[in-house]
Length: 315
Image: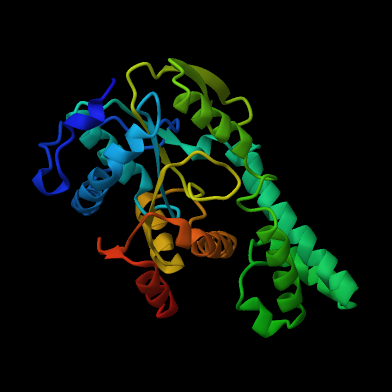
């Protein structure tokens, strides 16, 4: 849609549209989103900020195409907010497609969850052996903790000091996997973004469920799409390229865990291991936060990077 950006309203003149009964959501199979007032409030803060920079961003691409990323901790509202932003763009006459980065792990969720746990446990065991703390007694005790899924529970370290070594080294090994090229097909996302920005009319996008047999590709029509909205925890990662504007929806690990429980994201939402994963993902988000174009607090306030650092330090 040539020169579509020239017809965009000024940020101060924009008014939130009346939302349709049904809003198209991201393309993660089986993902069910529930848009609430808190998501609408956040989208209404974000969108005027986008309008300030959209003409410039669209003018930089010969096909007038822009890639946005909405990132943040699991369950923070990325899917809902991204869907609303896409809806607002369509109301202004700009084609928009919401893509879920969760379709691009190297393993289906069932096996990626297992790989995360394997890496943690293998790293922990290696740490015990290296430190000289591995004994037949701790082997038996550790096996019981693993069967009961309590080996990532930090309170166990107070009862059995060697557990602290196991957890520290396991966590270190897990940190070397989460959000890296070992876990995620970043190269495929870069390729998709490149095709989109080069004006591709159709792009094959990956789809996956939780099981190994639930994996397929779908040809998506992009001929009338101006904006690709990527909703994903790792949307601000250095491992891929092509994103023009990054929106970070901030949350602390405790807030993220509460979101997951409320959304029933998975059966082990409050397990010690899941809590560890969320904490590590939070550290990744914090390390990347300085690159975000817009940071929004849990309460929907725009934060400067300095304010963001202060806010996180107080948690």
